[in-house]
Length: 115
Image 1: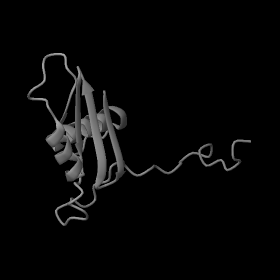
Image 2 (image 1 turned 90 degrees about the vertical axis):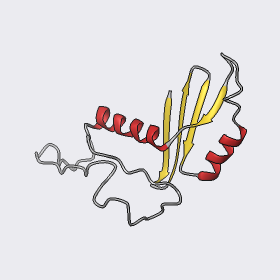
Image 3 (image 1 turned 60 degrees about the vertical axis):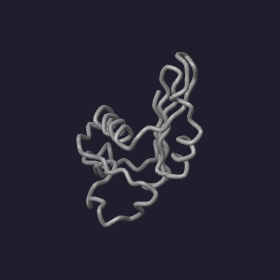
């Protein structure tokens, strides 16, 4: 199971649970460092639950696969880290979702609020 929660462009959390492993990665460096510090993944026995940090590439791959599968968007996704803020290195003109399309038929412009 994978969950990606994004509060703002530079505040997000990713969880991936599979076979007694919980992989966590976030835009929050302190949270990632805490998981690294507390993880006992290298000492765990087979079948024991472990948690560990993932990486930015795993998160981006998940987002891009999701966008391709559910939104038919096949464009790279820029994922900010909290320290990036509004960076000059961020690509311009890259939106997470395409702009909504305008209604083109009279039925789509019906303003009767469903009645």
